[in-house]
Amino acid sequence: MIDWRDAFDFFREPLFHLGQTPLSLATVFQFFIILIVVALVARLVRRFLRRQLGSWTRFDIGLREAIARGVGHVVLVIGVLLALPLLGLDLTSLTVVAGALGVGIGFGLQNIVNNFVSGLIILAERPIQLGDRVVVGDVEADVIRIGARSTSIRTNDNFIIIVPNAEFISSRVTNLSHGDPKVRIRAPFGVSYGSDVREVERLALEAAKNVPHVLRDPTPQVRFMGFGESALNFELRAWTIERAHRPGWFKSDIYFALWDTFKEHGVEIPFPQRDLHVKDMAPLVAEAVAMRDNDPSDQLPTDDP
Image 1 (tube, rainbow, N blue to C red):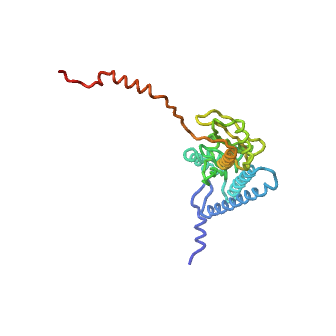
Image 2 (image 1 turned 120 degrees about the horizontal axis):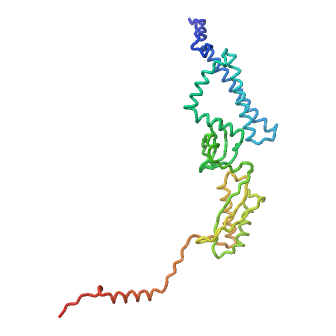
Image 3 (image 1 turned 30 degrees about the vertical axis):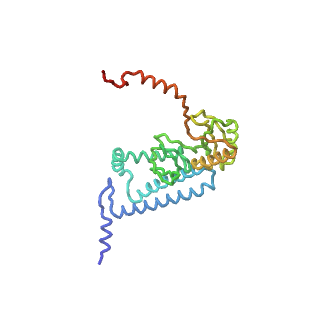
């Protein structure tokens, strides 16, 4: 039979000492149980604040997420600090562990700590928020999650890219939605040289009015960009909010509208072409023949009598 008294004594037997405090398997087990409970409470607090802050306040989604995560981290830290004395651990005895941890951070955890601190800066300063449209390097995507170590962004192809938080702090990041959700999309196009440029401007603005999700304020604009090799170059500039996260789709709608409008009014959209002009070749051919006849090297040798 199992001697439960011996089993309990084994779990309570000190394995090692942390400073002056003995630690046993029972103490470690209790610590992890309390840590799990504190983590669950912190997660419940974050979920509760995410749901309720929207109805309690008029904060935007980014600020609500920052507050929820910040309070959750505070609950986690306070819970751990309160749990340690309950286990009989003297916080002053943790100085040795803190020193060892500092050495470990100095050598091996630099990137982790850098990303964690950068995450706190992002939550505090909010240079990016959930739902923002950002350009990181050559990737344009939507921010879907801001974590303690990394931020997740989703491209239009539904690819999830995990970006370390430090990259948003130390590198140049373009936030297309920061402070103002409106985005201006530019759609360059060209027409033939025989077109009336004022009529092209009027038709392009008319086409923009028929494109869904084009804002009336600011109004669309047409710019004459210059004289190309095969076309007169223009650019239609239109503002949108709903299509800010789908610029390719929005530009496609603009081009469909331009094509239909120009085709209806007979405006030609040219393609690259070259004109070859051939001069009168007769004088050049006669000159070449005369030069050949006068060249002694072209004469055939004859036999002397």
